[in-house]
Image (cartoon, rainbow, N blue to C red; front, top):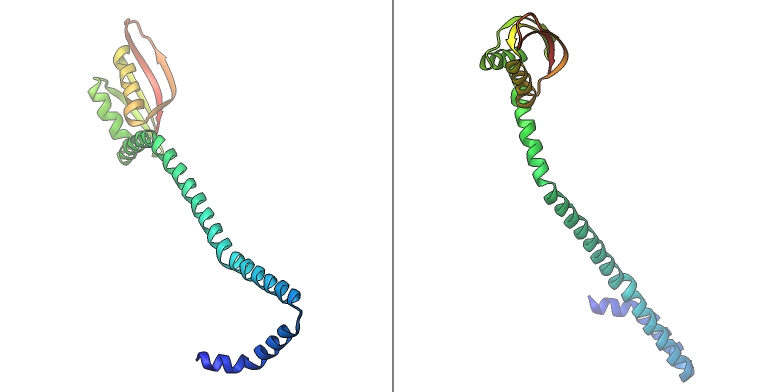
Length: 172
């Protein structure tokens, strides 16, 4: 194969060699210097420069990913807390709002006089003559444990002190 290439380019090489030999010694040295410079330039342009550029890009990507990992590590605690909160609210959302409110009212010794569902996420509730402290603890528990919030509230204090009647709307 090398012989075929040599035979194919022999005429051009002999012509170039003859022209080179006809040049003065000074011109031959200048031509050799130019050829050496061109070889070095092509080695730099076609080999060294792409390798160096690829290396710099890889280092830049590595540094970017390292800073991302450091940021993610610094936010890990917040993410875990948010994940736990989301898990709690997802579990609560799977249970109907009426079930959660009934269960928590019983736990706080509150009797629901009347309730009206208002869609899947809202519920109107009436309670009568319940201890104020039980009522407040019940509402606070709904907010903290089940992410059910009071959207409207009307309180009434009949003749008995420390006891209230209320009409409230709860929403998820």
